[in-house]
Image: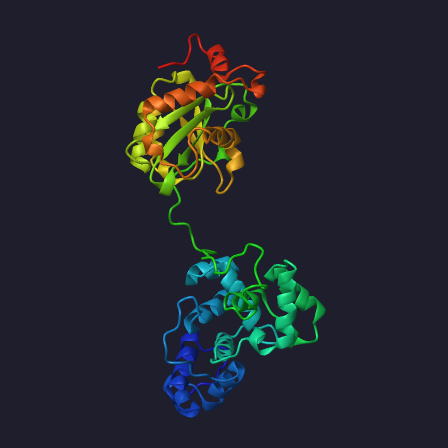
Length: 386
């Protein structure tokens, strides 16, 4: 006998009921197939608002599916966090947060079938772009862009100044799309950056190229920051024309002593590892304490370097060159000898030693007009030479 329990039936039963409706079954027939009464199925139908048959064409994987929305509803019912729900369906937590906020019912409940119907309604095409259809909106957006406003600032301004006029409001994405599609004019309507194409975004996508087992700069010993004890170095690469050549640069933080690494065979991880191991062997062990580097892939084999050189390697945060400012300053000085856009492979190991010798014999105001070579000599019983 058919049961009447609209709020107690398993989710799988409701899912099957709506699948049958989308296949063309009538409500009574679909209810009989899943084992519920017609009135029970009718209540489900009313609560969902309607049943919309999606377009048969392929749907991008970036869109949420009906199953995704069911999983979100189950997670909310189980009082899971948004991040837990997002991880279970393989989406970013921002996507789930926006979905719940945008597609909940007026009473605040999140019904997965109601939400899916609302998404399908908004997806109907063809739909004329809002900015293309509205001349006043298009003119206002163009004027603000000419005043160097960003799309985010314009969207907030429209929402603030036109609360009662939906036709005069546009979200940030709408403005970007209109701009990149040329609806606002190619000459006057521009971003402050001058960019005319959308940059690829990786928001919410885990970084695949992250170096394994990194130790970040925040775990570096305090004596490194004080610059009172020598033996702590900063390193980087300066890159030549077309990224086809490179030179490694090492700078000791206390004495500003520079040592250049010759990379005649390229600057991928194995070549950099071998060069650092062989070309720092002459540095006394007491001066091989730490080495701070950025998160470049050339140091993927940092564990091998640590094991064979004695350096303890620390990595800066992404896009934070100021965390190894001594090395950045030295790289600027080195560009006097190795200009940008030139082929660095033409310089021999002898050339690099001569450049390092000149820099190490140049007085530095930070050292009280002593040279890095003098400062290093004071730290050793003998000069640091090959």
